[in-house]
Length: 177
Image (tube, rainbow, N blue to C red; front, side, top):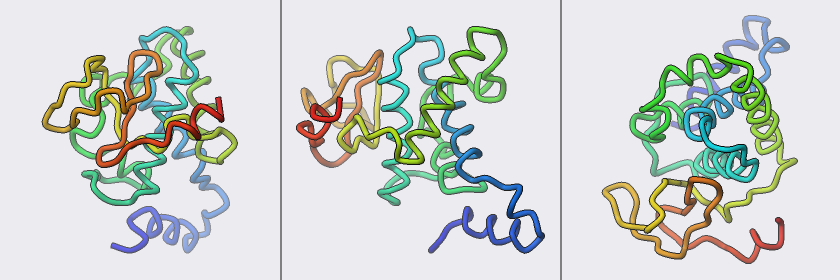
């Protein structure tokens, strides 16, 4: 479906006279920040890990195919809400619904939100070389949804980032960071 539900939602909001109230970047950034909290909310503070998680969502959106999508107002929301697409979201739905339950969580969420906005706006570069997936498997073993990438993965914090079907371009990642 060309344009997707996100474009249809924007057209409806604009037609109803509410276009100026709807800020897609902020909406998407909030969704990504919540998703980051489900994936890395309990991990030690690691900006590069949060940047990489946000870039996986952005890279999937850019790629536009090959991932199960859920329902949502925007393409980013459809990607995040896809069934079995992000383990943290499946395992920690309560964190997604309330990512700022206490002061430490609120501080981490605000950092994740700033990172998500930076990634979506292009102010923060992709530190994954185009990764579209990640997991916590330090051995790089194959699973049903994650082929063995061995040393073709990038590690930030507790997560290993990779592209589902192709090798990552490491030389660009090393130059950026």
